[in-house]
Length: 149
Image (cartoon, rainbow, N blue to C red):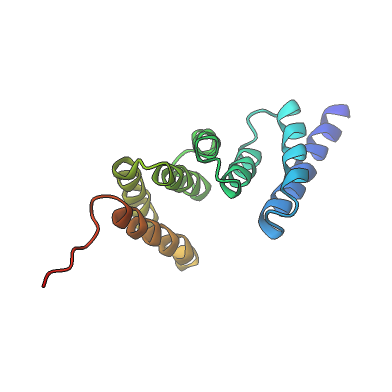
């Protein structure tokens, strides 16, 4: 019975942490961070908690920590799931923010290809965000357009 209660508590904590991260950023990130710490104490491989932690780091512009958290989540989800693709995209975006534009661009293009292989209009927002990030990454790297006279 204790195991069931512990799993239920963890599930509720995940819902609360992700809600605090997504619906009230960054106002409640400190509380969400505390909750993710509690989740990791009893479930260190909780992929949703890793995503929440990654978004907290991303909001704080802690790009390397965010990239590592996104990578951890991507490994747990696998790239064949939508959440795994989102984690890979998040990791690539962090790389871009750290100046690793070529590697980030390759990763973003890979994720965009995976997203395009899914025949579902409900992920158009994911495709658009990924495509926007590809453009930003291209412009930030050596691919900036030149003006000719």
